[in-house]
Image (cartoon, rainbow, N blue to C red):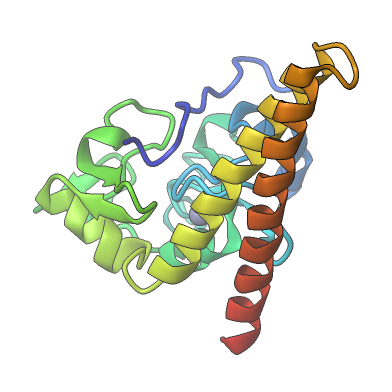
Length: 209
Ligand SMILES: [Zn+2]
């Protein structure tokens, strides 16, 4: 499976036109363009404790001295959970803003379909690699391996959320209290319990950190 359900697509013309260090004005556009999920690990932004931030794909430290890229340049921004953003930090192995990858180390823009050639999601929701670069991304850049418990819980929770939402749409398309309506409702109720328990597990996990 892919790490993200859908490839994020940055809009050509952002709604806002911020200058200076006001890149966070792009956050609502990024949230939409990344479908409310972290560009790197694919976690959903609607769960408590998963604060989302605006990451500079090419780190600020690289262009702050030469001004080749502006802080608010939309095509250099990524909607990212704080865990991915913190782990990525100012890492950029080549040290050259024009060179993304050197010796199987480096980054691929999460809006580039190539991102999915290097890492993938297991059936249990964890994140593993196809390539040497993917291994570096998992172990060094984002520490997906160390974050395995929360990454799997967040994925299960998101799958559950999507199923419940789809069932509610189905349910509402049937006649109230019809056999089908009641069947779908019971299935949605069962999943809601799974969702509830998963959510508690996630909160307990974050509290234990
Ligand atoms: Zn993330």
